[in-house]
View (cartoon, rainbow, N blue to C red):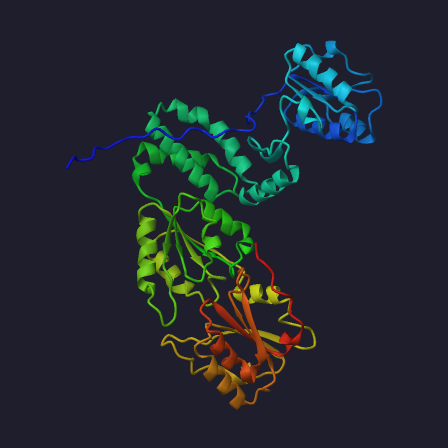
Amino acid sequence: MTKRQPDSAPPARLGALATLPVFFRLAGRKVVLAGGGDGAAWKAELLAATGAQVLVFCAEPTDKMRATVSDLANVEWIARAWSAADLADASLAIGDVESDEEAQAFRDAARASGVPVNVVDRPAFCDFQFGSIVERSPVVIGISTDGAAPVFGQEIRARIETILPQGLRLWAQAAKNWRPAVLAKKFDFRTRRTFWERFTALAFSKADDQPQETDLHDLLAQIETGGADLPRGSVALVGAGPGDPDLLTVKAVRALQSADVVLYDDLVSPRTVNAARREATRIAVGKRGYKPSCTQEDITAMLVSLAREGKRVVRLKGGDPMIFGRAGEEIAGVVQAGIPIEIIPGVTAASGAAASLGLSLTERDVARRLQFITAHGRNGKLPDDLALSALTDPRATTVVYMGVKTLPLLIERLLAEGIDPATPAIAVERATWPDERRIAAPLSSLSAQVAQAQIEGPCLVLIGAALGGNLLPLRSHK
């Protein structure tokens, strides 16, 4: 049999592009803007932000354009219509015109002068287009849909805006300022790349902090002393929320987008796990009652081991990690190992379920107290030390976590303690997931209905008079 030899394959060719994304340096350069409407005023402001010298040609500008000219020193209004001669030596030409005839004339004149041209809202006459912009200058991100769906581009922009901290602009500027000092060290390519990898990791970990000269000195010292070879991992305990990935906090998304490894529970929805960056390794470490599970000791040891390899590790926990998430054991183990740790809270399952149901858990004049309990002790049984008098309070709303298996015994004890058998109760399976299920019944008959439903997914039980209202209909959580 012929032995297979190692084979290298060229990277895949770049797919077809509707447009070529490019970035123009316009500081100090002439840009011609024909038109004085409100749309042209926004273009003038945008161009002025680049440092361009913007010449606005129009007979009668709108109030917004007049204000733009008044406020921005590098925007000049010339009170007449444009002419072909005005385009000489321009770097760009922008037209906000009334008719296709004038649009064609403007385009032809610009091309005759060798000037790239854009005619607002007339893509057929454009050499280039303006897209949506995410601004963290000197980091600038442009988004184009080739004119097909500007609103779609705006939504993409909004999502990127939530991921990128505002403070990244400071770190991007620091990179520009510090580059000469790095180049002066005459590092080889690999060492120089290591420096910038370290810089990038620091920038994202301290995105909201002002960069300091000490940061530069520390980074250079690590490289020069060989410290760059020492792994410097970290752990983040991140609340995944109840299931709908849109309920992740902005900080949680940022952590997932910068993770090297993600350890996640079975209670975390696949769509939430997929919010991690594509290159991240995903490891399922589910702990499920009465089923084969990873031990807590193994999970904590894995967090420590991966972080010691220099990995940025995200421990993704359903709901909020600090509410019945056994976070304390993991925090203690990571801290004892001397590894940096961050806790990022999430929307707890009770909040997600209440929002999905459309019921206030603290309805005025009905509920005076909101209480969360777990009905699952260390031994897997109903805890013996539950404060039954508090749970039977008619003015309380009780949310029971991990209570499906022990629900019959819990309800039996509550009824024996004197709770009204007609108290409204709801079991919510996979709250906020696309396949959410609800079982609403008087407390006395809830456990039988839950058993009949054969619940398999994460489930909360909510008990109290505040739950007697009308439920919002189930919807698709996209």
